[in-house]
Image 1 (cartoon, rainbow, N blue to C red):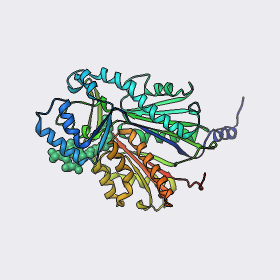
Image 2: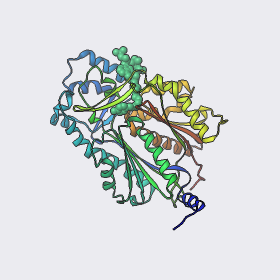
Image 3: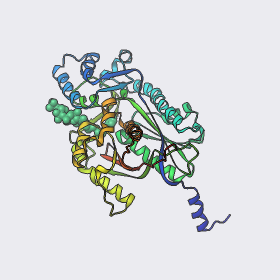
Image 4: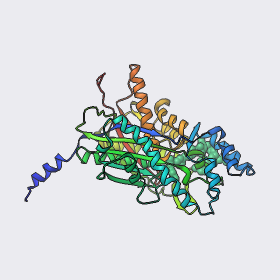
Length: 398
Ligand SMILES: CC(C)(COP(=O)(O)OP(=O)(O)OC[C@H]1O[C@@H](n2cnc3c(N)ncnc32)[C@H](O)[C@@H]1OP(=O)(O)O)[C@@H](O)C(=O)NCCC(=O)NCCSC(=O)/C=C/c1ccc(O)cc1
């Protein structure tokens, strides 16, 4: 059969979604097991790891915990697991197999809890999902967590799955970026984004190099349904994903990283990370806005709403300082950090959920959050994912 170039172009156009992709529903979940107050974390961590005699290290961890801006975190890890696996405390002992056995089962289950909430809110059957993008730093096995999640949710066998491994804290941003591209280029596509992180793969006894990570990271999962028009009855865009960019800060590979080793995943966070992000975020935002709205776009940062990955309290402080943001602008990020800590790739989904909650609350009081916003997530590279968001205004009652 012969097809002309024009017919080919028309056929391609017919396969594309209408308008920018949008977030249609959001769900989040945390392990129900252990909730640790940040005030008590150092005492508890040193007790269970039998490290109370390292008094200087413990005092340092207390100083760090006090400065994190975190009030509590959720963990799958508990004393029962530690009793069964004392090797998790000693980086020199082989423990990767046992860790992977646990997270291979738990990471998809946690993702399922978040995804069920998102799918329920979306209101369509799980079998209408066409694509799945799964992000985790705990995926060291194939078939992986994406396939298990697809089975747990009863997705159709033709669902197109992609797993993003070891993207760390920008995994959620990258997954949403990819979902936008999939939805806009496949008419009728409905993409489930799932990010699920369990710190058990990184857990170890305190030493001179791991205190910041142990004080910062927590467990959680976030799920988002993404789709472009035409929208089905009942589907309601929460955030339109207007444009998305990824930038790597040259020469900063050393600053953030993780390494899968026999004794678990090691990670490092250089002390310069907040400064490096502070020096680069404004340019990323300008580039993203120019690509969305043209070179002569004039943006006032305080006129936007903000969904920034709360990688750490000084990162939020630095971004607030360089963009001269009013104090409440990063409140959604600060609240998520306070309540859950840094859940790596899943965190940005919690921030979007918090923003959506605030929008509803403000709307109920007759106020509205700004129409335009920016989402940013950071991770190893140093990589910065930026997305420009727009909130459609729904007439009351719709
Ligand atoms: C709460 C901190 C640790 C301290 O707050 P501060 O305002 O800087 O306070 P201080 O300057 O008084 O520092 C307190 C102590 O912490 C030490 N410190 C201060 N940052 C440091 C430091 N990166 N190292 C090692 N000591 C330090 C600092 O030297 C000091 O030690 P000391 O003088 O003995 O009390 C704060 O710096 C903080 O949150 N830092 C982390 C920022 C950060 O890099 N976040 C990660 C962003 S990217 C991301 O989210 C995830 C990436 C990821 C990667 C791998 C994965 O597996 C998963 C995910």
